[in-house]
Length: 255
Image (cartoon, rainbow, N blue to C red):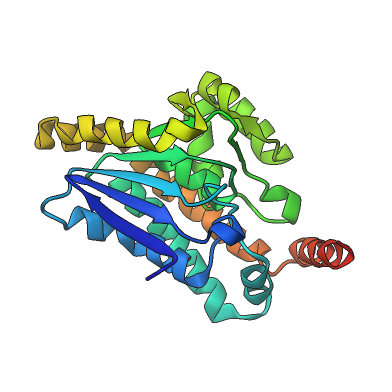
């Protein structure tokens, strides 16, 4: 697999989204890889912590137009995308290893969800997060509606999800979306150092503490995530999403 690269650095597993020319937008390979990688690193007996980041200028731009147009007409593909999104979310939550997100650039849509569902988040000083699902006619089902209210409260989560506004690095820390800001050129080093500190902690105590804290997320899996994912599935082939994608394609053609 080339779109998702896993590298062993001592007890740390560096997981990199590897589509830099596409700003790490999802490909089928990358989406499928993210659905399975959490079980794979958890099964690695030498792994103790994970760093998740993107290669190039972006963390992840989220979805891509090819997939958006295909889900509109291909029912089986649409169901597969929803199933993989479910596995990405539950995989991150249930991965026993601590996951540090190194948000090196824009984290948008599913990219935003990947960051928010990580255990600790370091964000580059020029990076931002945003969830624009609603702006393209979709329900924010693959993470935003599920995790944002637990991080920032319901009122602020609604504002961020309804409007899709960008949240810069300093505001992300202030709101509780990220733990701290790092200079862009030092971000990965700081994330790897943090992961090494986590890897050196007593493994069972750390894993069970993560499990205990994530019980708050587990309780919301069925009550929030599943209905939200199914609602997103229904909007994937709805007229508002189709029109939004057509506008995006038309604007690119004019550019």
